Length: 112
Image (tube, rainbow, N blue to C red; front, top):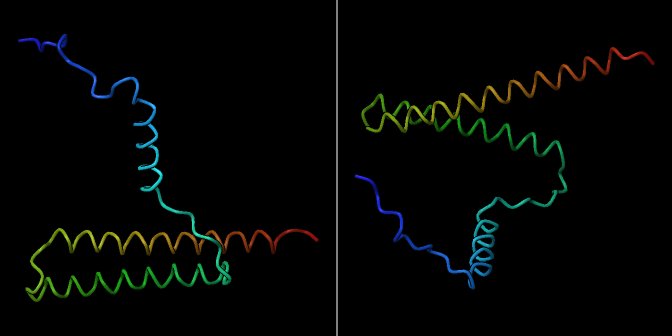
């Protein structure tokens, strides 16, 4: 049985098409993340806050795991997702550290 495509009507009419496109663009612009203005602290504060976020994620993961083992938390999916987030954050931090050390070594080995 083939679908009857001849009686389908477009949901957007031609005269209002431009207005609806503008509405959709405004909605998408409101959903996209905002670029934050640079803060006074700069690079060092950004690194400190990133490391603190990773630490907090690891603490949350450990707490959820402990609660699951004690029977307080019943959602295994939630526990596993939190553990993966914690692991991913730690791996990312480790990779950033390795890149910074590699760049430092490259700079130190440059001839003057």
